[in-house]
Image (tube, rainbow, N blue to C red):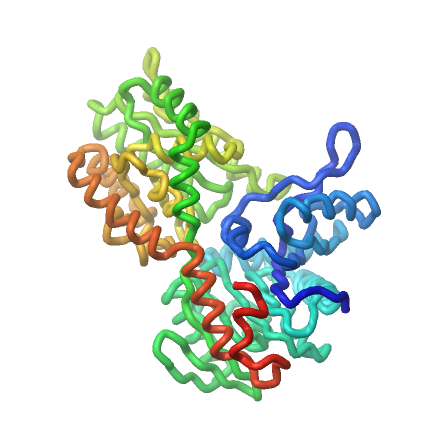
Length: 492
């Protein structure tokens, strides 16, 4: 094993950068977007490592490692790449992860393709990730594994004799037993999770679903200890809990009030004129409820003709999995629906829906958050949805209203200030849009203060502290360092 200071080894499906080939033919590492990347940037800048896939089928080379080495210097993490072949990308990532686990865990089992070859690829790639961890982790490092793509890595690490502390955080929803049991390899995945000392979920709902699956399929012991649940099964001992992820609310607030965002904010407001801005920001995915949201907005326009020329929906969709046919079909469906709505309602000088299919620069995105009168965050189901929290942090003028799906993980923390909706009830969403636009300034400010208190209190630092304290308390006795030294050892 390579000699490094004791620290954290982050293990996730993707590195915080993506390797790309520039027009010149040279390789470069582009920073990746996502809640995990944003959250873990808050870790203290010490010699921590990040193991993950490069995001492409680029093969190992000196040039690729040099590009990642340059990215390591600027990111604060030592980049440790996992290279996947085209077949592994097809069967592990696009196959098992995104044709089985993703739809199943979002209660969309009709979209699943339970191909046995996908399961074999999943096992093999998880073993490959474990091999990289064994190379990079020092004795005493905390190995922190993230999300549904890597639920078997701990199994391979323990089978190889690793005694390091292992923690796991599950970023997407966890399904109830009646859905989870449809997964042919569910028991193996549950057993894989039990090889971690600490198993974390986004919400109490996800924790309870996991415990129900654990009881029904593995029949292990469960002991409640406050907000923690102790699990014992077949010689394995873990604790599980809900650790709702947060954002660096202070940082979002600072950038939103800065010069670059302020300049873009003025441009947005000048372009909109007297129109109220309704904002949707999503990654392209069928779980985000984008089609349902557009249908609800169409109903709103039908039933409130007085709103015409007075309101504009700006829908930002960040490209995702653009090479997957189902996602291409979703993009086409969104484009057709936007064209249909605009065709029905557009008037001279006014287009009701403005659709942007691209990621926005950070300051520009925050300017849109600040400019928005209404944010529509209406996923069909979501692990957390940090867009809702980002919007609240950026509402410096406190004039915006959050319309939030009750099926987003963020609803548990933000329900006191948001207008909660069922995204499948288009009429209800349309009514909530009307309610938000008609709300008086004092009520908007009251609600936003409640939301901002929650976002600042339950921030990313609190998330990291909660998890680190839990790992420290419940480390395995076989770990080489005394439990009390964990916090200093991992650098939280």
